[in-house]
Length: 517
Image (cartoon, rainbow, N blue to C red; front, side):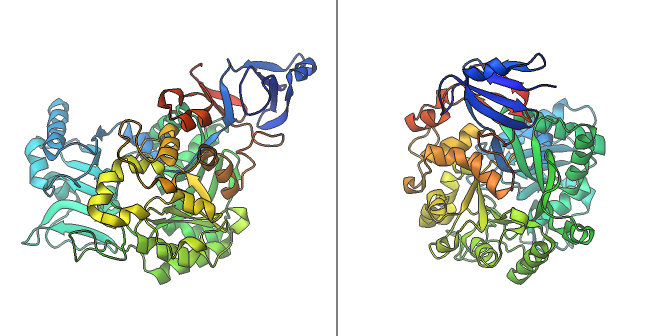
């Protein structure tokens, strides 16, 4: 194949620019005079006047779970208790096989004023076992049939770092949290490898539709195996994927000598993921002080600090990066205290995932030695929840500008399927810190990013943290682009939501999605 000449686009450079790519690399950017060098094998790509930016990278997703979400019962976090039950009843009534499992996701009990009960699900499910994952994916609400299927009963002990909620008689209510979620999932799921491949392909395609050229996926073992099969079929996948595997794979990776950046440009292993605490919505994020109105509840500590340090030491020595889930201020403190003693293995940054609540005492330690992977889109749903459960502490949440000013690598992502991967929401909330349709629900505006910083958080900064030659429109960099209907920086600066629209995605110099300007 010859070169591709990309023409008729707008960008931050001269209006008559032409960009030349050779498969996966930008060769040259110049004026229209470059067109005189076109050969018979070269291709001309008309960009229809769309605005060109480096390709967007979503720095925190769960790719297999995202693909599966298109086949699950969707439950918006704003639904009432009775509305959730009504949706389960409707789906159960339409299903042919009585014993078929109903999976759903998205409920939030933060405003219900009632504790979810297994008996209520059983009452509406017509004999189907039901498992509903919470909005933050840190809790599962089970029906009595589902509990019987997995053997969850009065004498079932919780796994380390897991929570089984019980009534005053010690009987499980049907709600489990944190590490117990994985315990439930492994006992209920019957998904085949072919199912995994189908779901992952859907997830990859949907990401491309949002202008995403690559993701860092916090992936399960099953998801990783399926991704290998997909990538083995063809390097020309819709998007690129870096994976962080569960921490229990660390020993095997280290023994094999696998290091960060192992793989090829479309699919790489970066390291392992571990959980220090839970989540805000489930009131399991590990806090320095109790939750509002719950004097005995400081959340759930999933791993002791000494064990966290041991895992990071082992990974770092092996040349693998670590992604550390930490949401509560005490969990973030643990993560910062550990990571400040380590540098970046093979150029790939160790990371703190979410870092939603942080004290001033941790801020000075935020340097480019490690990265903060944050999800501005969570502010859409967390506004009321944070004020109810964290009170005045919520003013210290989502401290993006503080992170940035300290020189930390600020990576933006979505946590899909927990939230939409549509980057418009991530960019908008990073800059405006309130939904465009609910402007009064604004978080501390002093922590807002500028439009340029927000775009960098999706492009240039992930490239640095992931040790990729991407995120910049310059010769020698990867040919990954996102096309917009108009200049996204201007749309963000002007607060024009309607102008913030992705129209095309190019990965490895190939147009993988196009909707026209």
